[in-house]
Length: 609
Figure 1: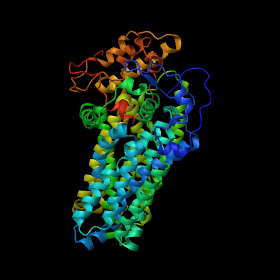
Figure 2: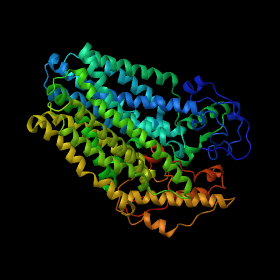
Figure 3: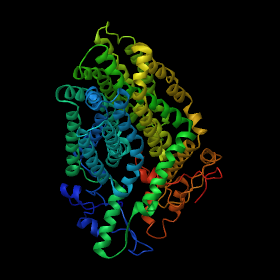
Figure 4: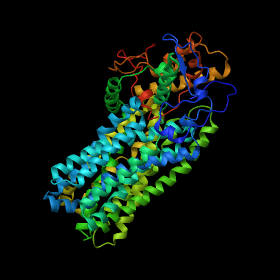
């Protein structure tokens, strides 16, 4: 966000407690700022961030930004840890509640199933109610359902409460990344997003270790009790320390406060640009577009299938490791949980590997005047894709009790390393390839991989009883091996494939047109209507029919952008004309990305608004 040009007075510092508890806080500088407009219904004052605005999350201090990044990353680590810690007490659950292994495993599967549907609801709700409100309410319910699990008297109650805990606890998967993107500009958020993205991958590897020792020492109820206490502590931290970071909600609240104080009409710049959407409209698009992209875009479909298989294999391990290490080797639950240390070490190495990769990418960005092709993001995924089957085959043929346990545990390192590289690299590729639709792409990815994560543990016991520990462990390895060509093919031919995919082509056309608009802004004092570039227009037209019918009037697309610029000299839109070309690539910004209609129409052509 940007305020007006020119020298500005130093903005007053807002006490931190007011940042957290008062979303409508205003200072004298905010009240007296010369907003564009006349303060009427037809020409409202346009509320923007003032220069040096201490309430703008982008202006938070580095210490505060990183502290909040750690806090929201802990929320994703927490929910991932809860998903797998249950496995440490499964043997006791079966014994005390008299359930079979397959039914008891539903406690993992249904929890992960909640991940498939929860983010589709919580992400758009954060647009309307703010990230802080969604965080605090859902984590409160997560804590309550975890406590309920600890007191469950039968397996039915336990697995139902586990599903509800997973559903409500899944809000950080969209909200945490969004909060980070709210605070860091695109060029500086690479490491922060890497830490956030790695947390839900490392959490499942830590969970069985904690759950195993707690389960063997204090019983499975204390496993669930500890999870309730842990999530409760995180909930309290969110309530006390997490301020609202979502700019559209903050500016909307500020406009409401200024209207109350002055009696005049103030409206958020973002609401004027995009239009204020209802929760129903937001949810409708958020629930439908991810599936549309998943099944109509080959890029999205293949990468989502690949990541879903890997994610499913990770959760298969929570059912397979007790068989391999506890039943075959005779280890107890606590020592058996340590078998996940190999995977955890590999994940940590993978996260460290991404740091120089991020710096290399930033260097490439500085050396070019345009946007780098998305395929530049894929080399780490190729390395990871090769490491995955190596680790899985290594584990499959060294997990016999006659072979030292260290060999099979060490096999987890290349698997964990490859998993992190593939996930982070492909995430970045999908974001860069789909920009304006990246929230929907990430939602589709999250939903599909959660479905696989829920399904894979259910057939693990049948797989191992029928094939034995060697060949049963080889099946996931063969699946990972079959997927190795996917990142290689897209690295070599991705640019050609994207041109044939309607949504990817439109996203590329949008970004090219935006770059041209930015160049015009640099060269000219007053913006003018930019004529469409034939090559760019060709990339976004002649696409397959799309049935989306949501209102086009609020789309911040490349096409209507030029019209907003042409209206800049008329009313309070004068300030918008200077800022409309600034598109900060926030992959979690549901308001901008996930709830606005594509310019792909039912007639299969990009339409002007």
